[in-house]
Picture (tube, rainbow, N blue to C red):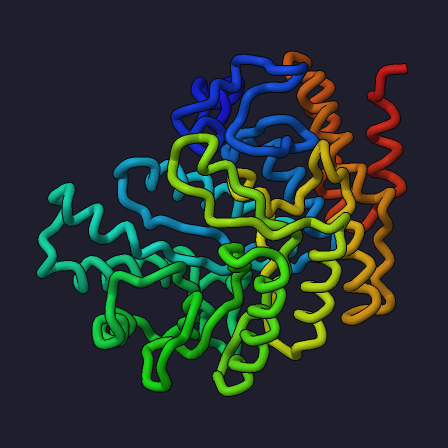
Length: 364
């Protein structure tokens, strides 16, 4: 959340330590070593969401894996779910896909808050799966393999294997359930997804990626990962001790990890991450790195996946230009109504007309 859009700053910008209303050395305080090129934004702001979706499309990204905390009106879960549904609506309009990474660490917190007793945790999971089937899995835009939806869970899951199988029993098709790690042969998970491990530093993190690709050969399904760096702000914010770091190496880390992921033959590649500013893993445009990581994504997609992919680095500038124009004209409904035509033009691939629309309203 941001104060200009929602009336308050969300935890991910403040971490109960920073005050974005305060400027230090010409920039707002925020819980990140880096700053978005479009400024601190709100994930319910349709301008920000449209800008991000178009950046993904122009970079050659096929969709988004959304970190999701359920649909309960508890803590910020309800707000995040509301934002998720709006984000999905724009992904669908752009012809992009989506999948869910469910944070079932929420379950013990809901139990502690007496939302339901521990004995009803599986029933809660079943209700949630039925809701997901109706609102997520049934969508043509949801990521599926052989008609089965792909569902991720992050970290150490709350539910055990038997409970997951019972939870999935209420669905017409069992999802391809993928966890951050797979530690044994018999598991409810079909496989694992890779994730940057900064605890041992850059060299060890890169070796861990190689080990993941070796282990993944034995699994029915794996999701490879690419990451640009890891530079969290948790220690400075007083949240907890830093997890460690992975160096950016002037963009080499992202190029190398994405190249390995593309060569791995994994059916899915997760870009870690689009916008986790607190951990410094973001690839969306930033003040510090500009469009560099999205330009690398374009280039490597063209090289390894689709030689005819024709989007350019200049195209990537258009959504940010549009977003800034929208904010400059926040009080001018007539101009904003005209600028609303930008999104469908870009989705349709009519970039020349989209640029002409922006040029019409740029201040000389």
